[in-house]
Structure formats: C-alpha cells, structure tokens
Image 1 (cartoon, rainbow, N blue to C red):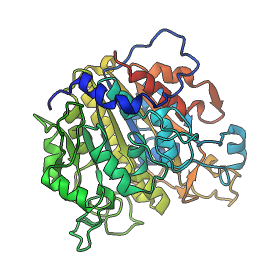
Image 2 (cartoon, rainbow, N blue to C red):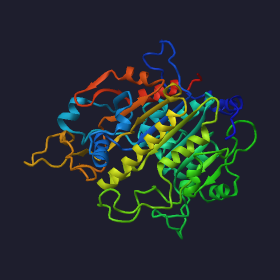
Image 3 (cartoon, rainbow, N blue to C red):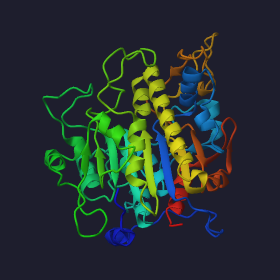
Image 4 (tube, one colour):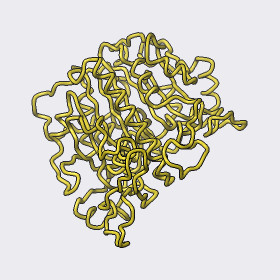
Length: 457
C-alpha cells in the first residue's frame, strides 16, 4: 500500500479532535511513559465468556484451554457493565447474573475504544452526550493506519464503536455512510452485501441498509465513494473486494490504497447458513463463496502494515454472540474455533514482523451472551449461579455437555489475554479480584491503555 502522510492526516482530523475529550489517563498517569508498540491489534470475541472458550477447546483439542490463548503472558478477566452499572463478585457467584443490568455491544465497544462508560446503544458518545475520542481517531492522530474487520455487518456495534459517533446503534444506513464517507479508515471488512442473502445466494430484493443506502452502494461500484481520508485534499475512494480468492490474495504483495472487503453474504459469514441449526460443529457444509475471518484479517493487515508509523486493527468474531442469542451450541463452537484460528494466524504474523517488541495484541470480549454452563446436575439441583456447573468433556471432536441458560447478555466477567508493549499496563490495572476468575480490570481500563498506546513511539 502507499504510505499515508502523517502531517496531512493530523490536519484532516484536527477540527474534530480539538473538541473531543480524551479518555481519562487513569491512576498511573504520573508514571514514566511506558514502551509503546508500533502496531496495535485488538481482537474482540463478541459475546464470548470463559465457558465459550472452554467449549471450543474441548471440542477441538479435548483440552480445557486453547494454547493460542493460554500461552499469552497476560491472562485476566474484565467487567463489562455500561454506565450506571456495577459488578459484584459475591452477588454474581451467589445468585447468578439474571436480573442484573447488562451492557450491549455499543456501550461495551465504546468503553474498549475510548476508556469511558456510556449508555447502551450509544457509539463513541459519552453519557454527557458529548463525542469521545475513538480509538481509530486516536490512532490516526498518532499517525497510524487503521482498519476494522468483522464476521458480521461492518456497520454493527462493535466495529462502529471503534470509529464513529452516534447515539443510536440502529441507524445502520447513517452509520455505514459515516464509516465509508467521512472516516479515515484504510481498511474495512465485514458482511452486509446488499445483493446476496444470508445463504450467499443472489437476493431478488436488495437491502442496502448495511452499506449506507443504494446511492452509496452505486458509488462504491463506480469507485467514487471514500472522501479525503489523509487530508491531502484529494479523494481516497475505496477499492471494493468481494470474491473469496481476492480476500486471500490481499494477504501477499501490493494492495490497493484503501480496501472495503464485502463478502457476498448478507449478515454473517457462516452462522446463518442453511442446515440443521442443532447439528454438531462442522457437520453442515460451510458456504464456499465467502472468505474466512482469518483470510480477512491477514488481508487487512497487509493493507495497513506498510505505514512507517504502524497501524491499529480491530478484528471481531462477531457471530459468537449471534449463536448464543439463537441457542446454537454447535455453531457457537464453530465461531469460537474460527476466532481462535484467526488469533493463531495473527500471532504467526507477529512472530515474523517484529515479535512482541513491536506489536501489542489484546484479545477480549465485549460481554458474555447466553449464560453458558455445564449440563443439569444428575440430581437435578442447579446452584443459584448456573455458571458454577462445569462443562462436561466428551472427548475431542464431540460437543461437550453444555447449556445456554439464557438468550441475552449477562454481567459475567469476560476473558482478557495480551502480550507486547502495553500489556503490562493492563496487568497493573487488574487490582480487583474475583473468587473464581482471579484478578480483573474493567473494560474501560483496556480502552484507557489502548488510548495511551495511540501516542507515537
């Protein structure tokens, strides 16, 4: 890719950022500045709790943990409640999460992006109704290239909360327009193709809401949508990528200046495909007409990695949440394993590109969905908190005994894994302790550290 001009980019963002408050620096603001990474990769497993990861590891490996995650040096938990909420460890493990206020992905993404709690449904806007400095804006101000990748629509809450400002996450047309026409993003990949349905078949009734409306879509096809992303007064239109082979091809060689990757499917890469929704993992054939999350992530990295100032990339396994809402244990395991496969690919890229001296990797979730537990006890006596019931191993390649006890988000702690410059800052903020999950921090602590890492090296 061509290199961005850091000075012109800063000029382009100046009017917006001058009036945008920065997330609080936290209790260690007076300490010596920590080492800062060249590249920052945030990976978000939407809706994924500790038991989701264990379910995937039991099925794939017959083990309690994925080595791709367990081998990262920082292993913590995080609370996820939105503005006005709280997490009480004793209350959770004594009574369970049902009835407790929970976050949604918009508020959680805003916390991870800005370091500030906000109201459910709000993106990049604080509870005082003022815009917050998003992580994409902060990284761009620091001169880095930026990108967002997801297995669900790119205008959905988690990617949108990293880049734009809106008080209603449901304004998808408006949100997509902002991401495509006014954001400085260099790469954007996710579902939402207007001309294909959830099965990847041509749809006779197009739906343009995920791509900013029909006019925006026609502009993308014509190569005229994109605006001035780097502040040099020249338009920077998106190059539209749709074919699976083209996604895989992005991972090597020269890439276009800006890339919009839009698989030919409506809302999820694989979660909504036809077939038995109660089937075991990988029994129902996968759609062959869409890329994998891993291919999208590696292609996105190759778009942004030539910037001399480094890059920021958020990669979301968004459909873990959808399987949990829909009560699909087999597809839940598929989505978890796809996400972890992507973590492994990112780690391999890091190994060949500066290792942990140059790269910060943070892997976490925005919240837990489904209140996942092991199966009903043999005596039929559930504890007050069903999450205390462990999953039942049944051997590698067999779905463990597991129950989705709810179809909504919960207030459970979520996993956090990290390595590289800045990961020690996360560990230092984990000053609270949960009797089951151990040391934990808040999702705003993650956002605050990422904001600190956005400052140039």
